[in-house]
Image 1 (cartoon, rainbow, N blue to C red):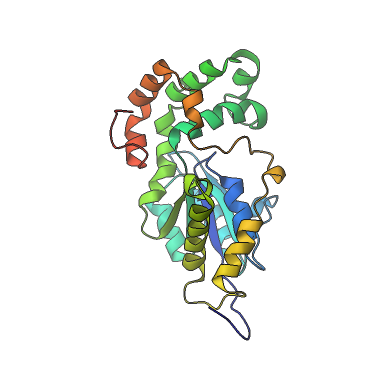
Image 2 (image 1 turned 180 degrees about the vertical axis):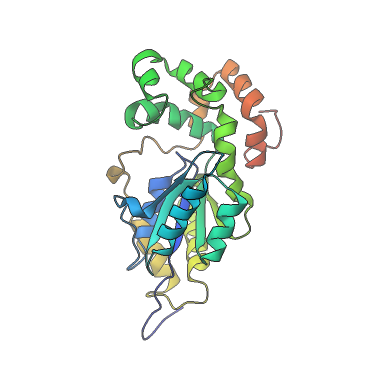
Length: 262
């Protein structure tokens, strides 16, 4: 697909993720598109909704800031799904790229990330000073801490619900990490989704090359291992049973298991 003459500008869009599901990886990939960018340090371009009761002022603030996004810009966030938020994106004609990951790997990543990087998290002081045993941290994230933090499914399910939104392009962290072929296929699906009906600055294949080349784990202070299935080294038999009891349904809903026999 060759293109001559002037290209189109890409309409603004938003990317979001389940926390610890490849946010920075996808951010780097999207920034690899020619002339397209999101300044991760710009608070006006960040959108966070992680409370089940979404206050009307939050929607007003997000609607205003999302409407300010310019062509060739995108917003970044972690947003609980709601019909109201999905409607807001449709009303603003914003495409939405959503990335998610195996909830078991999300759990393990969170258990390391909170004490090392997430100073604002309600469990940060506990994990930093009292619950220093990794297994105990995982248990608290599975079951929650009454009055402080909900159980694993209660907090994570509203993020994963974007997966069922027909106007959202959902991709997985695993598809970006499994192999070079899988990564390129997934990036190509993003290009087709975002540039559909538009004249891009370079042919699609070249754009995928540029996006793939923009991946740089050394420039992400939240990147730890980025492995697929690392939960197997962290969750013993007892923790697996605890996870099944609390989050087994979430694992099936998100497509990572067919049943409880794993």
